[in-house]
Amino acid sequence: MAKNTVITISRQFGSGGRLIGKKLAEKFGVPFYDRELIELAVEESGFSKEVFEKVDERASSSLLYTLSVSPGIMHGVTGMADLPLNDKVFLVQTKIIKDVAAKGGCVIVGRCADYILKEYHNVVNVFIRSNMNDRIDRATNVYKISMNNASKEIQKMDKKRANYYSFYAHSKWGVAENYDLCINSGRIGIDQSVQVIADYVEFFEAARKAHQDK
Image (cartoon, rainbow, N blue to C red; front, side, top):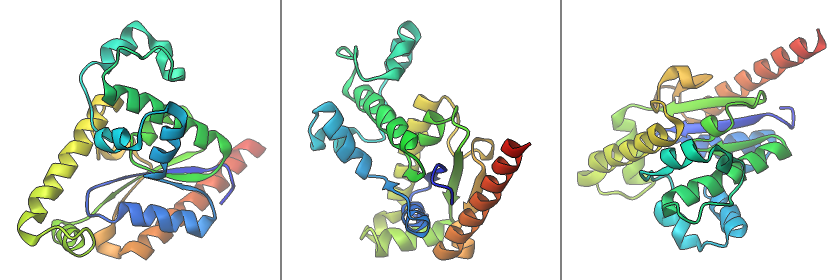
């Protein structure tokens, strides 16, 4: 993979999206960002790590109004003293995501990265889903959620991510038109999903190079 291609991973809870993203980054030898974004955001903002973990990927209610009266706020993290904490966190993470994308190829999981980088031409956006039985199996065996609570927790997490995406990206989470590639990891497995994305990225890069060479 060329060193300037950014891959964003959106995922249903329990679909293995984070693991797919991590393996993909290892395959291509590029940085991987999921919770790592929190560490960078802590350094950038001065907020505590606990603050970011508490409000990570949770929407509030006032950012749209704030942006409507002060659109320049998206270009940095200044001038946001009156914003709710959730919105401050989103703006800090927005800056971090743009900063890491500007450095070159990487894999970014969640946090509306596809929307934040929508004006970038070197981005491949991927959505990972899976069937409920496989997601329950992962939730119980990997995340150690009790079988009795697994289905409920999956639905809760999906709703949280959908609400977050809807609020900040002004679009519907999981809709195919928002992504370059949608994969059912339960059908083909984690490693095969990684390979499918890697193949797509290679075709994507070849097409970009051909276009640039014209």
